[in-house]
Image 1 (cartoon, rainbow, N blue to C red):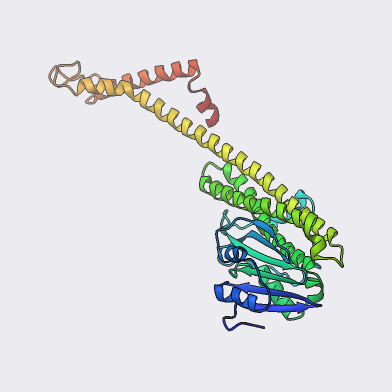
Image 2: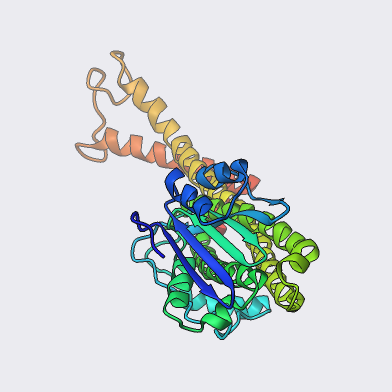
Length: 363
C-alpha cells in the first residue's frame, strides 16, 4: 500500500506489519489512524516535531520510542550496504581492532565530519511497528526496500515487533560505527599535525570536539532507552521468541561506542591542551627573540638620536668629520660602538641564562 503522497508505505511478514513514513504530515499520520492504529495525540505531536529529546513512553497497546541519530552532511558520502545486517560481519569487540579499521576510513581532504542530528520516532505494538522520520535515515530506507523486495525479509523482520525493532536499531548503530571509525582516523591525523609547527589545527580540534560531543549526546540516551526496552518491554514485544541475546549483543555494541567516544574525548582534550601549550611556547619564543633584537637596537637608537640633534658632536659636520678611517670614518665608528654594545648585552644575557633556551633550540 502506498499513499498518493508517496510518504506512507507498509510491508508485512508472518502477521507483522511495518509501516514506514517519510516526511510526515498531519495527513499521513491521519492515514495511520484510518488503518486502525490509534496513537496518543502527544506522541503524534512529538513525531511531527523536530526538537524533541530522546524518550520512551509506554501505553496499553504500544510503546513510543523517540531516538536521535547522526546523518552526514558531507557531499559524496559513501553509501553503506545493509543488504543483510544479521549476516554482515560484526564490528570487532576490541578497541585496538577498531583503531586499525579506522585507518581504512581516514579522509585526507578533511579532518572534520559534518553531521547533523535526525529524529526517529517508532511506534511498537505486539504485531506492528511504525517508523516516522524525515527521510534522513539511509539504513532504514534500505532495510525497508529490501523487505519490500523480499530480500531476506524473514530474517530482517522476523515474526515479532521486538525482532524488527532490534534489526532497525542495530542497523543504525552499525551506521554510527562508521562515523566513529572516521573520528578515530581523524584523531590520528590531528596527532601528527599537532606537533607540526607549520600546521594550525586549532579549528580542526574544535570541530572534532564538537562532533564527539554530538555523538555522546546521541549514544548516552540510546544506551538508556535500549536498556529499558531490554529489561522491561521484551515480554510484550516478543512473547514467542527469546530476544534477550539479541538485545544483549546490541547493548554490547552501544557500550563499545560509548567506550570509543570516551576514549576519543580524552584524546582530543589532550591534543587541545598540547596544541595550546605548544602555541604558547612558540609565541613566547617569538616574543623573546623580538625582545632581544629590540634590546640590541637600543644603543644604536640612543646614539643615533644624539647625532640626529642639531648640536655639535664629535665627528659631526660642524665640528669637523673624522677621516682617519677614510671618508666614512664617523659611520664606521658608530657601527663599532653599536656592535660592542650589542655584544656586551648578549654576553650578559647569556651569562644570566636569558638566551640559553633559544640557543639550545637552534642547535
